[in-house]
Image 1 (tube, one colour):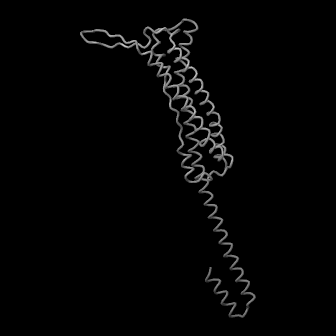
Image 2 (spheres, rainbow, N blue to C red):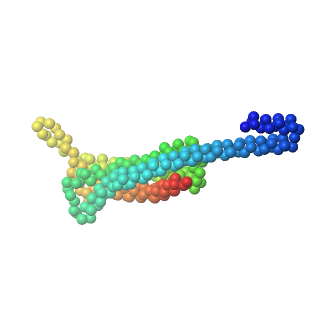
Image 3 (cartoon, one colour):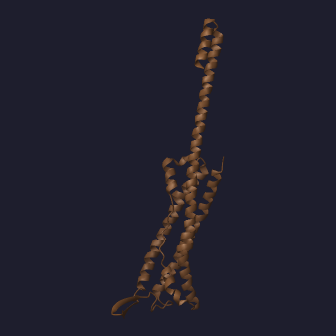
Length: 249
């Protein structure tokens, strides 16, 4: 192309036709400028495509961990750990009201009154996004909701749950340990055996340590369940908004 224009310029110069030469020169400049602009546009398009691909990748990873955390909150914590505590408290509260109790289940449900719980969630994809630039999320509203979820809502609520559980564990262990004084010593085939039955000689309706343990278990399981339940709807809504963004062309 360059050689072609050079030949034209030389011929025009030899023919002493400066006006035509000027026109061709201007035309060549215009073509070069257009070529540069097209190249820049293609480069910008490629960069935008790369950024969109990266944005979708990060949003997908955040979406996936949100779904896993929601499942963990629902099935492992609320239904599993806290469900066991609720089951135990209902078992004994029913006895306090009705005098009806299945004696074979006492030890099982007593052990359920103090269930440790550790609440965690996955911040990995969010931290990775922060390190590369949170502004990679082009949707301002969605970006702000992601930030609010991982910088404020989840840390604040899980921190409060941790405080509740630490206090509960301390108090429940204190009362539970006081109930562990029913140890029998028996001789069997010349061996000394320590037989432990937590509920031996404990009057459930009047023992203050038991009633306090039951009260702590009932209140804490309800409060913690309510806090976890407060997290799930906004997390589901964030998943929905991420899906909408991922489905955009």
